[in-house]
Length: 116
Image (cartoon, rainbow, N blue to C red; front, top):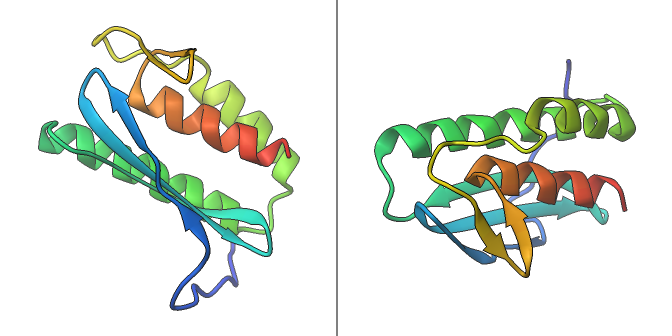
């Protein structure tokens, strides 16, 4: 999976705070030409391991988004890989929707952006 994408100094993005069972999570979605191109997430009060796993997952998602892979294939892979991914901390709700983990929220948010 090759990417010729070079990150400019700044890109339009949104960074909502999502209250999860692990603390506050900031999810940054970066866009170029209206298309999702970058995913970054951090959990405020959680351990180092969880942040490393979440950061790695987001970086791999970003590499896929920046590649030449068709977006429908990325969406299909993410749905298969991340469908209702549970972490053992219990579910949480955001905007009246149920999520099973922080990664579940990130994946569903990215899939929703890809479906646009």
